[in-house]
Amino acid sequence: MNTQDFLHIHAKTDLCEQYTVAGSVCSLATNSETLLKSARGTFPVIADPSARADFYLKFWVDDFDASTPSWQQPYVRGLGHRVFAGFDAKSSVLADLRTRRMIGRFSAAMAADAAYWRRVVFPVLTSIVAGSIGMVELHASCVAKDRLGVILLGPSRSGKSTLAMALTKAGFQLLSDDRVFCFLQSGKVLASGLPRPLKLRREAVDWFEELRDQPPSVAPNGDRVFYCEANQRGEAPDGLTCEPQALIFLEQEPDPAFRMKRMCRSETISQIDGDLIAETPEAVATQTEVLDHLALLPCWRLQYGGNPQSVAARIASRIFGNSHLNNHEHSEPGEFI
Image 1 (cartoon, rainbow, N blue to C red):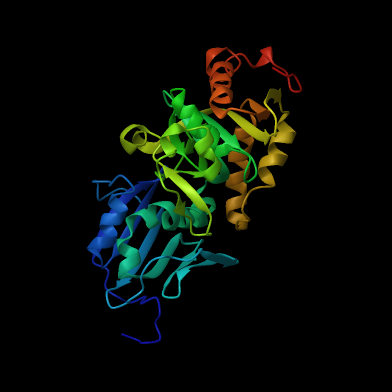
Image 2 (image 1 turned 90 degrees about the vertical axis):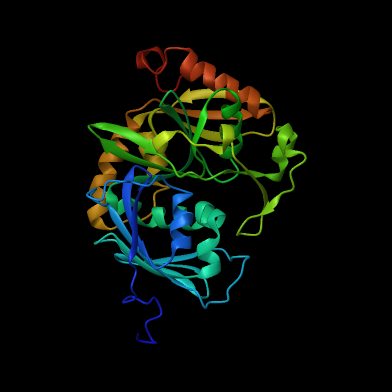
């Protein structure tokens, strides 16, 4: 093998499986059973070998690499249709967005760190390829009830994860935290997530009693956070996909408050579009169509503060307890409720 071939492009990767990832089919080829185990612990395995893959991963694991945790913050850079992602000095991925293929090299220790793949590696890789397979990635959290979902959007520290946690206390299931992937299927817009735990800031202990005896973890960026499996038994809904019924843009206030205001379509598109990751020209047309469908959903701006569980209960009542979602004419853009 060529010693200059850092990614070991020509290495044998005879082990191959397919998985459902954010509503798409991923094919993973590797030389490591350990890496397959990490993937199986994250995504449902597709038993049908004839299933057509939407994107392809080929990862070589170096059993002689002595790298050990903790892992650094990922480094991602793109140029045209190629994207590089570095996870440590000897674990990297190179993606070709035109062919939707990724090749990579990982240390044995990183390949075996299933929690790190679930929290970091798989979300980063899915973000990289999302646009090229027809998805719009939102910096958002998503919860669902009976396959009907609510997407919570907003800047960092606007309380998306905290409200998502509170909504699970009100009978919802968590579909995704931090990243939500939207796509079209049979003319409907669907939202899908990744099976990762909620990441809550340290102040969440003020609102959720179960966190008080749990020591915080150190995130890759150095923040001390709580990782919480919000769904019962740590399980996510089958398929991790829902039909979103509303988008809620969060604006957190220091004092107790609850004001929901309908947003017009142009305001919604502008708000989402400004947060999208730059994509290749081929992906932009598909993303525009998904974005147009998202903007047709009821969209609200929520100015709120105070106890997140009280806020979540009011969201659940307003969105699912009343008829706002099914009778849009009851609330016009600009009306507070």
